Length: 340
Image (cartoon, rainbow, N blue to C red; front, side):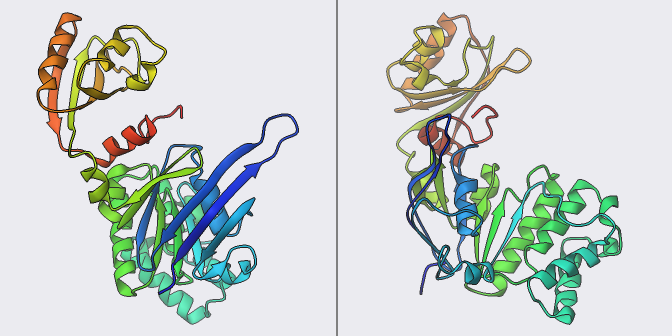
């Protein structure tokens, strides 16, 4: 069976007369099987959106090749477009004077879906996501969550072979996000071979939904595996999470800062047996620390060092490795950090 997505050595360079060329992607390689829900994780500026734009024929690669649904994104762009759809979080697509049902019908016609079939799909999808009662409401009267539900439905109208979801639950309340995730599972089960490429800032969402994940940073694919296997790579380490007061005079990946910083925060990162130390930004006088330790014996060393520095431990928890821990180890910062 051919791949749903096949990316081979794709590089994308943005040239500038005033600045050095910017490499948004560097020799990216990615293969997604048909029928997979595949996650793409990376901080802002990592290359996620650039890759999706290339795969959806909105942007040409500088070098390398990419195929979607078996078609080359450059030479067979029209055939790719007939096979895909895309939904992005926070979209404001549609015309405010149109109702939800009218707007969705209009988009279905752009895809060439017969009108009767389009209306059937629209009514069925609106019922599933809880928008049936708002089908005849004008778009400019919708709340943010309702509008995103409508945009979400729009992505399925042409029954795409490959669907790109770029932060589809961004900014939504917990219940709305749950409804949309349930819809995704149902849609995938209805027809084998449907494929989704999902980007998200919510690690729990990626862990819950995705068959496999790739982590991208600096335009490079760093790793690709199942969520379980990615977390298993950290089973030889101890993950210790704690809340301290007062906060350390630093934040971020302190193990990386250790190369340049000789202050107390970097000193903690140099403790024997400490593999990694990540400090979140202080809030209300306390700070969250995530330690990666060689083994349980190092926990005592960490506690003694904090006590010697007059740092009080407010909360202490030994936890199983999460995708967030894997991401921090590979990228050096959390996925949800603002200044990336």
